[in-house]
Amino acid sequence: MKRTRKWIAGFIMLMAGACGGAGDDARPITGEVNVYSGRHYDSDIVLFDQFTEETGIRVNLIEAGGDALIERITQEAEASPADIFMTADAGILWRADQRDVFRMTDSEALEERVPAQYRHPDGKWFGLSKRARIIIYNGEMGLPEGLETYEDLADPAYRGMICVRSSSNIYNQSLLASIIAHDGAEEAEAWTKGVVDNFARKPQGNDTSQIEAVAAGLCRLGIVNSYYTARFKGADDPKAAAIGDKFELFFPNQNGRGAHVNISGAGVTKYAPNAENAEKLIAFLLRDESQAAFASGNNEYPVVPGVAPQGPIAAYADFKADELPASALGEHQAEAVGIFDRAGWP
Ligand code: FE
Image (tube, helix red, strand yellow):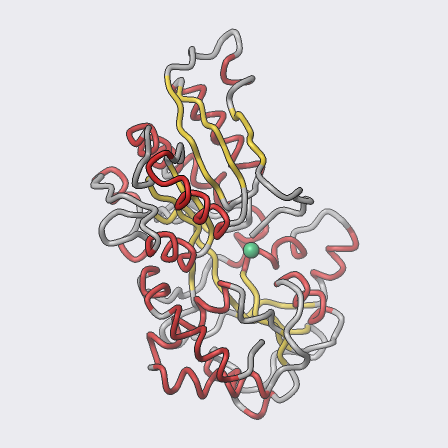
């Protein structure tokens, strides 16, 4: 979710467009929009600059973790300068909505661009890009026989094979939420216990750590978000590319409901001082031309139908996706956390 960069405690404020956008040829600055973002990609800033050049609206960007930004917006309350809250994972968007961060945005222009499953039913947030949470396997050991679904991961046949990060991570909470939605809480709990029994090691590190462990043969299987694989599969750096050669991607549930898909997304905040500009920026990010760049900045898939994915992930874009609405992931989040605790998935 984050580019590799050491974050000093606190917040970084960038004035995207303050230099480039206000150059000799650029339109004069006529307004602004304040974006609180849990995404940290240079490609986002390039798009914000383009928006400023085109509209004269300056984008002020504050970057921090999604939960930290929710806290900040909540504390700032009516005085918050935030116009847009942007983050990865529908589970975080749901948490923000629970804290009353968003307002309802009734915009046909936005609704037309984003399929219903990837936006809030009342327009509180809109998906901007997609990612899948998939299975990877060690190339030399191969995909274990019979493994087809997330559900299969709980089968005792796969004892000692699975590497996955901690359950405190939102990606796992959203994945389990999807399993609760499809299979029911009871089956989801049995599944979780089965997966814990199949751990190759105690959960540790992030998704990148799981990829490295699978590539090194420490575990045969891993559960990771799709975009992390592209950092190795498409790497210029020979060391990363060598790791990329040692694992393969597997999209589960292709003969059933499809692979679990999540989003990066954004919504207009409740007390946005520049709500109109905020809507304009979200609309800008949903244009065909912006979509490809926004998604590929993190090797994600565009959320707007018909826009082709770019970069290394394009080779892994042809799969069946679960059609569960992204809003359902939040609805089952608390239940998922309870199940993880009882199952002993740290
Ligand atoms: Fe991530």
